Length: 113
Image (cartoon, rainbow, N blue to C red; front, side, top):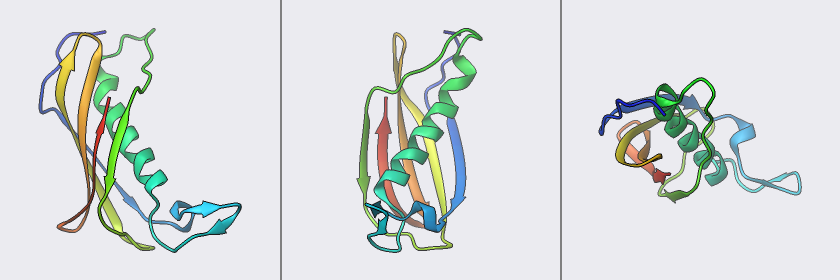
């Protein structure tokens, strides 16, 4: 693991809600809104992007915990901005906080270790 961790380092990603991001069970769409499972996926991705600059070439990372509060809906075509920042580092573990927003409305808050 490389040195140089900086608390408050940031990363962001914007996605557009597509139909394959709706919740599905047994092949049936539950409702036409952004799923919690998709939210977890993008929160983990933003967190991983914060970690990648600190990995040695022969290292890889494994996620340990995701805590998500899905606070509001996003519909087909909505742009969701995922903003992540490093909030703690201990030995070889990094904790990130991720916000998901549609315009000025926060639709999700999460922490990824």
